[in-house]
Image (cartoon, rainbow, N blue to C red; front, top):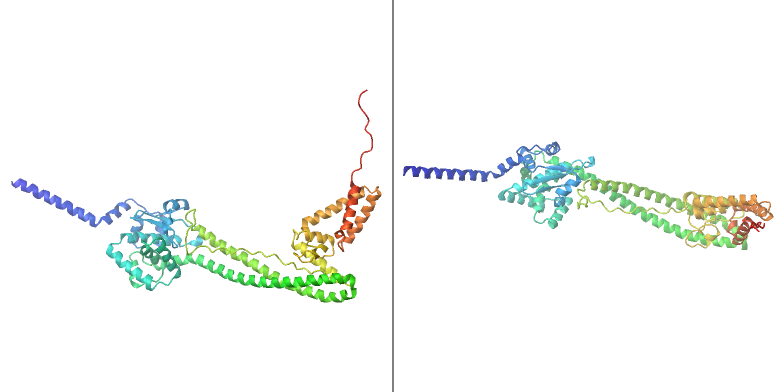
Length: 489
């Protein structure tokens, strides 16, 4: 009997010991789990460096290292964080719940220094929130919501939280816990005291966040200012171009009247030429002003798009997957299209003043300016006498047929026309024994000289007759000799 009692006591003591061990293990299960997870673990130097820069406390580092954080390339990150952690803020990383891992995107652009520091701290706070007891979480949640409801004034953070309410309504306070702790420099005393268990200098992390956010906000501000200035310039240019169009129409009408008076009333024509030329000078002065505004506009567009391109590159550097990230605060603004305005030709509509060489010289200079500034030309019918009747374009009379060809067909067309004239002239010279060829060769020299001061080839009758005869003169002569019959008898 005594032996049996001793056995029962021993069994009872053993059972109580086991229960005590199990109770102790349950009470310290988190520490046991952490010990097991950290057994033999050595944090990568880059991860440890970020933790040091974030001024993490030993407790925060333990939470971080238990999750074996990894800094991955875009390809690896997109696999481990297929939804990019569901984040709506500047952080580019994800935390797998139940201390199952922290993953960060590798961001190498030096302009974005601070992204990885903020990301690591943000995800560590998610893991820390996961560890809070119900009582601790209720207390922290109350402080976070009170700050959100009464003291939060950062519009970017407000917008971010509003997005979380739509996409992750059950995790909004969890996100507040990470976002407020890493991106807001000054918090109420209760929250500041709470975050001290994780960071010795939390303001350092907020400074990192502000640093790389500024890379976006500064560019966005520049683009917005440029867009406003471009809008003003556009309105100014449109107004001036409308005024020029009205004046151009008046000049064309007056020019048509001068052309009619040139043969019917030479005296009235010559009397009207000075005023007409003065009107053209004023018109060309306004053209130069508008062209200067257009150049200023196009230069500003180029500079603006360079800045927008830089922002796009920064966005791409933060793009953790092939799909576009939905980061509301840094979404690149839609580029306004570069408005490359057609330059208004600085050109004097020809004042054909027979009593003055000034009108001819002014028309020639305007025509040469057209050719120089428009290498592909304006198209057939947009220069020479035909331009009088082309209502879609201003009248262009250069008083030089070669310049007219350049205005209509551009540099290539002008070169081809000159080569055709030279080639036909050489062929006619080779056949100068033929009276027709010789006559056409001599007339070509004369017509070429005339075309330097007028538009001789614009006369249809002359052009059809001369080029038709040239075709006859240059046609190969038929072989009239009979071929000997070589058939055998």
